[in-house]
Amino acid sequence: MRFQYLFLLCLLSASAFAKSTFRDCPRCPELTVVPGGSYLKGSPQEEAGRFSDERNHDEDDQAGPGGAQVTVRVPSFALGVYEVSNREFAEFVRATGFAMRTDCIAFARREGNWIWHPDASWNNTGREFKDDFPATCIDWYAAKAYVDWLSVKTGKRYRLPTESEFEHALRAGSAATYHFGSDPEQLCRYGNVPDAEFSAVAPDKESLSCSDGYWDMAPVGRFEPNAFGIHDMTGNVWEWLADCYENSYANAPVDGSAHQSEHCEARSIRGGSWGYDLSSLRSADRSDDPPDILYDGIGFRVARDL
Image (cartoon, rainbow, N blue to C red; front, side):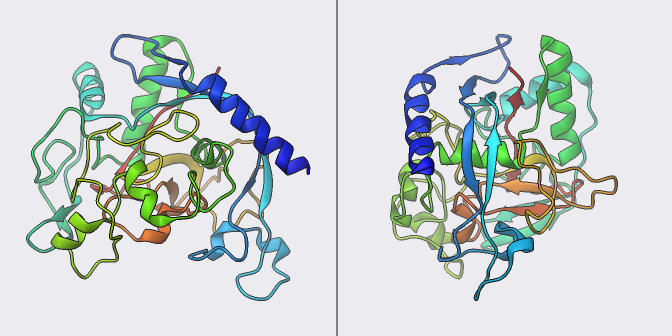
């Protein structure tokens, strides 16, 4: 009963906040206020595609994957309505002279797979460079430098979202497999995902039968938002988060903050992408990568304290 009440409260909050967006400067990312609330972080034991890192290892006392979900309370915060675009990231590079690396893993249409390209970079990924595409081939350090720059520029505390904040904002009050329900064929309405167009280019990859209109990356904001008015939380590109990745929730904070470690070998990423496994599109899914990797399938969005 308590969880049903919290779920209803989140939905009511969503309707109040979804249309309230703002910017801290003319070329800053557009933000929306995400209402605070509690939710069950992770996946229920019976969810198809569940991975072992989506639960609390300390409660691994059941058959199958085992482990319980974790109740998390997330304070209200502001989040980017869209993934950071090439236009927005280019403003940062011009203003700071930040040295961007090459050596990116990018998707090659001819091979139908992800391939390492020693000369590929954030503005040279092998596809036409478009201002409204999400900025990719950006490592965690460059994403962190961008939000630090916004903090100095605006006088507000910008940062990368935490894992708890991301899942809370993605679910937008939903406890289902996806923020809109449980039918994977509806994913094409809400994000750029491995679909019929992608299957034509990469027939050996797992894909859906629906069509989202893109085989490759899509411009930000082309699909329906979730109940909090946020776009592309599912699909398009993975997103860097503030947390140091750990393979369970046993030591994860329950107050919405990021898990940190003195020696962090991998950072958390969330949201799945247009060219990755279908199971990664679930709201509970989580993954990780080394913070210095350059990958055309990873971008980021900004968070900001209120």
